[in-house]
Length: 319
Image (cartoon, rainbow, N blue to C red; front, side, top):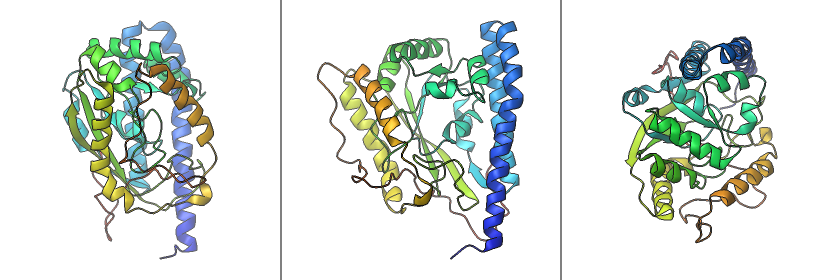
């Protein structure tokens, strides 16, 4: 059913207030984090930075619920708080995925794109929290292994970027290299949403219908063996099995708001893949993954099991 003009205005207001709030929180925290990074010892600064990031993200998600812009079911993540060092490996449909995970896991480390660590809004807080840049693959692996061996968990998206195709993009070799070197398991996490908002190619200021439903659930725990290609095939097939049927039921949405940013991401992904390529050569893509058609629009979202119901008050299962 077509949305009324008043409904469109309300959704626009929700989007702009949400983006403004997130920007304001980042700008408030950035100068404080910059000072703390210079006066606190590294270990204490990391604890303070990660705890503060969790607090800000949790406040932001609560605000989205209060505005009826989103509903969240993140409660299963609580089981990971005292689970010991492990790689937390979710699928990556949208820009909000790291926010969802970190809002429930205060001391988890995170591998981030290097451009985010250079972002004026995010840089100071991310550096205080000692989040890890992916600019150098070798340095990323070294720091990730160090974090895990120090007893911390690590948030690492196996795809290395937001999903470009249904139901998940190719998994990168870094996840098994890090897990094997640190001798830790890989805990998969399934992120489901009923909206393509902030998926690959979605412009930041393109308005989606609200509220958006997000559900995060724990998946299977994997142990990494000696065969990286076999592990990656098994990991990817698992995500395909968990997400594929529902993802294929969702049609492409918001095409007018999508952009051509895929070329830049493909270049960086190719560089990372080349750096991690094994002597046997590149792993062939899994036949279960649906590649986007040539010239077609990227489809990167999966539908939630928890559907919006008429008459809900918008509170959802929050934090």
